[in-house]
Amino acid sequence: MKELTCISPIDGAVAARRQPASPEAAIAKAAAMRKAQKAWAARPLEERIALVRKAVSLIGEQTGRMTQELALQMGRPVRYGGEFRGLKERADYMCEIAADTLKPMVIENSAAVLRQIAREPLGVVLVIAPWNYPYMTAMNTIVPALVAGNVVLLKHAEQTLLVGEHLAEAFHQAGVPADVFDNIFLDHAGSAALISGRHVNFVNFTGSVRGGASIEQAAAGNFINVATELGGKDPAYIRADADLDAAVEGAMDGAMFNAGQCCCGIERIYVHESLFDAFVEKAVAWVKALKLGNPLEAETTIGPMANIRFARTVREHVAEAVAQGAIAHIPTMAADDGGAYVTPQVLTNVTHAMKVMREETFGPVVGIMKVKDDEEAIALMNDSDFGLTASIWTADADAAEAIGARLETGTVFQNRCDYLDPALCWTGCKDTGRGAGLSVLGYMALTRPKSYHLKKKA
Image 1: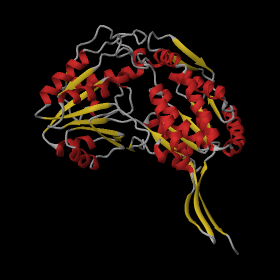
Image 2 (image 1 turned 30 degrees about the vertical axis):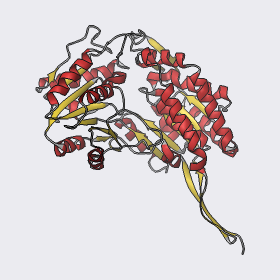
Image 3 (image 1 turned 90 degrees about the horizontal axis):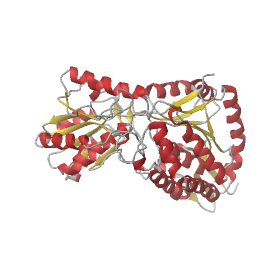
Image 4 (image 1 turned 60 degrees about the vertical axis):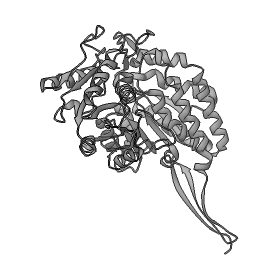
């Protein structure tokens, strides 16, 4: 079997190598976890919550390791300090709502009858996590799955092999048994064997559309629940009444943070014609102020892309757009090496005939188009195969809600973007996939309903 290899985008050196488990070993691991699941679910809810919280606390004591390893594996600058704040916010919220969310829904409890709907864990949960936010995205499912009484097998992306190990170490040190939560190294064949053979009960996959389709194909006919988040081409709309400076700061940060490698990053911006020229001028200045460089250096504000093949897609999209008439506003930066280090780019004179405005670029480039009114903006925002989030910049909350109701998306933001509120359902539509993460609906997805109709007297 071919080794799994993480190549550091910093210098192209090997950051980690791991041997994947064979399909047979993966199946045996899942079987052992299935045996342990009933005992885990029988533990008091408060005990499961306490163990999860302890694991989160231990990760918090190692944020230096998290920050350094993220820079090494996928290029995020150390100045941003890793992912612990968002991880803890989400974990804390899901633990806080667990008791109320998971308690039975009592329809009637009289002297004659008890009628209620209980929630039961699904069993073995397989989390196939991505590299771009490798801690937070994994923990979005790990925390509620364990709290609800499931056991969890984590398969992390090849680009972030060390993250899965780190999470497993923390949970085991906290007291969560290895047959309740564990990390496993798998290739595509191993993952497919677990799913197609019905050795797991739920799969959460974050990744490409092609990857999501292969997961659904493997699960077909097995009645395994599958949740997918397959990326996006998220738009922002700058209305005529927007706070221009706030819109530039927010939307451009949403487009460029993490070198544009965010599922809900802004890839398309539509600006009312009255603000267009001023917005572009300020957006270009904002991007020119970024410092492209080694993510281990404190002054770096945008690091390399996680892998040279991702950078290649960005360059191809930009080159095609320019060849078709787009205007590129950012000169090549000194640190741009033609490889993983990519100059962040702002494009105007773009159209929806260009890949950069239709396909997921997933890098530090954004196209900006002029629109005459809300109707044109809505039509363009919906002209996409994806639907994860959409951002509306306006002083009019009623207008934002009305526009949002007409958008084909999973989340609507006003005057912000690129944020996951754990109290709200994280979901998408169209080619972004399906499923419900976090919030009370996250628990509904990781449990099944069980109805009780107990007649107390014959």
